[in-house]
Length: 266
Image 1: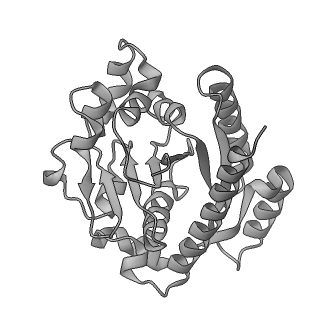
Image 2: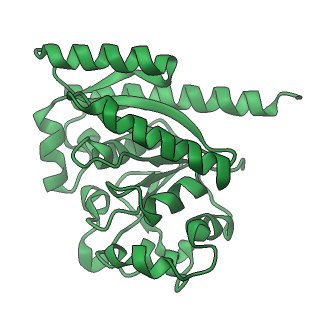
């Protein structure tokens, strides 16, 4: 099996649809026949909850993996979605930022854990916390690419420029292979002129890095996590679920293009 492609889903702002995108993109990729592992690095553990993993079933979490107490393999939990597994999170991750500071290779704890096992997955998605601290840095150092969910709001580009600078610094000093795979516009409201305006600005700034697919504001997307289900299982026909199916198709197309380019003789 080819090496798993590792993609971090990152935005330092909260409430932009980051975890929703992580859970539903992972589900859509699995539905397309891909084998997917989702690593929950957010102390809130919402991705784990959204995939129906109760807190009392999170015996080994990403916290123990980062601290070196447990292997990544021991933390993997199957989900109700065929071909999709998760490494759940716990609240202990909130203290990991401080604990990691004194550890050797503190930026590479996750990368080392991922390299330590043979991964039977096509894709590893990492749901990052809404910050640019050591947890997110670990994700960026472990990843081949970054996917950025961007809410259609007035200050969207301002926050994105800060994130891009961070990614460029990581690429320069810690992970030379890191690339932005794409930017996905979330919470798009076609009745709102601001959504169209933000979309136009982001596309003007980032060009073809922005996915054609936009994720609409959709009540079914908001309801699904309370049922412990991705929206694709909760209501497959709703516009939100269909948007994530289309996004998965775009992600796969870009990933295959990247892999083909890497295979070409230099």
